[in-house]
Image (cartoon, rainbow, N blue to C red):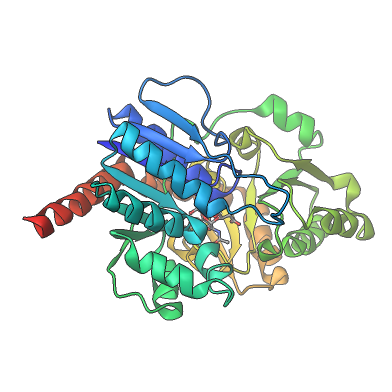
Length: 380
Ligand code: GMT
């Protein structure tokens, strides 16, 4: 198939999933065309079946805000026509589902029907999409998609609660590439970070409020009072300054490293004992799955779809949102008991196997065929 993929090219999970999906599809022989405003972070190197089309938002003195949807829709129109695409898959509803709809209508005028699939990733529904300033447009655009997928059952349920959607939403979970994420021995690196044999806790995110990183710091303070431990904070975003000052105020600077954005997160996960994800909202928690694939148990909140990935009492523990004391207790129950930690590490890796790239690729391929076929039957 010739597939167009629209996504955010940034460090967020939706862009990562879209990029890895495209790479996986190309490896299976599909022709994949990425349409984004910048080269996606994980799309590097030349690959035979992969094409990249950059969207350049128009700049004009009159505009305080460039009409990005129009530029994106126009680029989609051109790529679909010039490359004769079979299907367009947009990731993150805002504003991609809308640009997809607009492009579809324009293409129809030019004699080409392009089926559009929208994948809902989380905040496009739970935070941004429900904002009344755009909700009617987002609801309409999702409804007009030829196919809609959601990365978790919880996000599907939330979407149906928030919007009047009369379309079937197919749950296709996020996935992991075991070629990249898996257990590996990095003892030399571990000794650099924790020279006294301290336990290592890690959090990775885009440092937004919704991640509740203050709970990571508060639970770590409790843990560090009981045993020698180090905390790695990976990523960057609006909360970073506040979190760094919190770390200083709590006297945790010596045991905490704020590493900023990192590409090789698998190397950091490889030396970690516990991954902490206390989010207020989380449709899936791709980063928790990445940790689990590397054999790192997850101490998390029970927000959104995290429980569909992290199994309480097996691969980690789930606590009420904001209950950092419970998170600390749970972390200590693993960190103070090597055999339990080892069992949870194994359980985490086993559970991650359910989300292998190969398995989930098949689900997307089947869904693409179903959507294209439904269109053909409607025309017959
Ligand atoms: O977590 C973020 O803030 C980034 C966001 C995104 O759109 O890139 O992540 C969302 O999509 C990921 C991939 O499907 C999910 O694993 C994350 O759970 C989801 N984030 C939220 O729901 C907050």
